[in-house]
Image 1 (cartoon, rainbow, N blue to C red):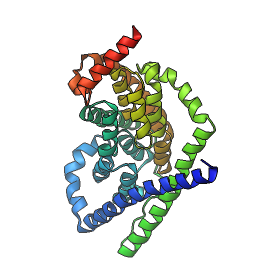
Image 2 (cartoon, one colour; image 1 turned 60 degrees about the vertical axis):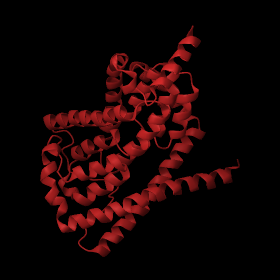
Image 3 (spheres, rainbow, N blue to C red; image 1 turned 45 degrees about the vertical axis):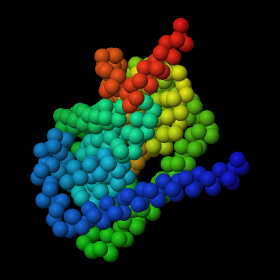
Image 4 (cartoon, helix red, strand yellow; image 1 turned 90 degrees about the vertical axis):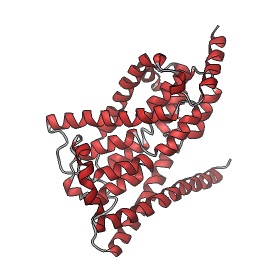
Length: 329
């Protein structure tokens, strides 16, 4: 394929992703704005307040979190700034909220991809949500005890500004969608540059010791690396191919999938939340450290969990395990 053809194809793919995001975000934003103007959001807030208080967050943010779980990070980030004035948030607040999002988002889509690779839908979903809740709680306790990141939020990118008119809302939404397109193109091309220059391959090789600490064996490293660096949605096809074509112990595939649930799309998603004010060290190194420790603990327990809980197709997983053991002999 020529360079020109590759550019055209890549731009079409990016525009396709963007259009899917727009189709989701615009209706959700209009509904949220209507609910906010009718006072429904503030009426619902007290019911979520006890949960959000565990993380020191405004109760309205619960709606943005639920949106992130079902739709994705982009929609959640836009909604949180529509619900809560930026003046009421600190860097610690947005970092804790971003941590919840980074662990678990777009679950109906991403978990189906993980399921097709072999692991069970529900157990990996629960692990992602629980991991996000646990990591965010640890960060909140750290920030509360030390006063770290208590400074007012000053995001590089402000998705939506407060407005009192529908015209102002429409203009703000248009600006947000335009900026989102610019950011999405930039992130997609950054990933391509990393792959073409060979930096991505070097990153994968450098990650082998990290995966070893997490209890993931070398044969499963390519599979886990795709999700860690590229993300579950963008690397979905490669994830499924690696899991099904490689002769890897199914429980290692499960551990790799669990690790990806805790830490995936390390470049793109991290850059996105940092742009809206999250602390880089917390959402990058903190998330990686949590993923390694949590997966290492899970590796000690995975042999005790029944196959029907771990795998989408237990019989197929057992057959694959027999093949792996036969080749090893």
